[in-house]
Amino acid sequence: AQSVTQLGSHVSVSEGALVLLRCNYSSSVPPYLFWYVQYPNQGLQLLLKYTSAATLVKGINGFEAEFKKSETSFHLTKPSAHMSDAAEYFCAVSDQSGYSTLTFGKGTMLLVSP
Amino acid sequence: DAEITQSPRHKITETGRQVTLACHQTWNHNNMFWYRQDLGHGLRLIHYSYGVQDTNKGEVSDGYSVSRSNTEDLPLTLESAASSQTSVYFCASSEGQEVSEQYFGPGTRLTVT
Image (tube, rainbow over all chains, first blue to last red; front, side, top):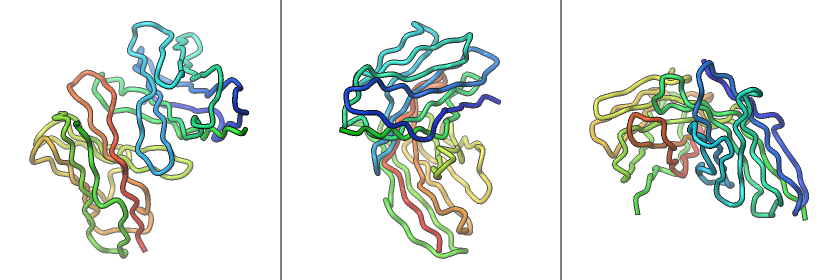
C-alpha cells in the first residue's frame, strides 16, 4: 500500500525566510501527489497537485513543489514566508488503482514568527 | 457557488448513542469521502462512495456506516458511539473516476462522553 511520510511535525521559520516542508512517498507506480493546507478550525484546501505532467508544480499563495522520482519526494517550498502562511500542511498520495482515494501524511504545522 | 457543507459543526453525545453526521455537496460530484482527523494521525479514511448505492470501507471503518441514496448526500452514522470516536470529522468530494482533487467540508467536532 502507498504511504506518505512528512518529516517534522512542526517547522518554525521567520517571516521572509524560505519555507521547506518535506514529503516522501512510497508507491510502486507513478503516483498523483497533492499538498493541502488547513487553517485553524477550517477544512483542507488544495495548494497544488502533481499529475505526471511538469515535475515542478506551482500552486496558490506562492507555493511550489518538485516531484523527484529518484528520491520519491515531493517537497513543498515558498521563497519568503508570510505570517498568513501559518497553518498545517498535508501531503497526500493517490491510490494505486487510479481511483480517487488519497492517503494523507500526518501533517506539518508551519509556525511563522515576526 | 458550489459547496460542501457539514452538520452539525459541533456535537456532544454519550457513549452508546447512535449519532449521524450529515454531509451535503452541491458540486454534483460522484465521489464522496469521510475522514477523521486526530492529533498525530493526520487524516484517516473511514468510508467512501463512488456513486449512488456504492459504499466502500476505508482504513478505519469499524463502528461507522454510510449510505448513498442520492448524489448530494453521504451521511456518516456511528452505530454506538465510543470515547475513541471523539475526533474531528471531515467530508470531501471529487468528480469522476480519474484521480482528482478533493474538496473538503468545514468539519464536525464530535465529543463522546
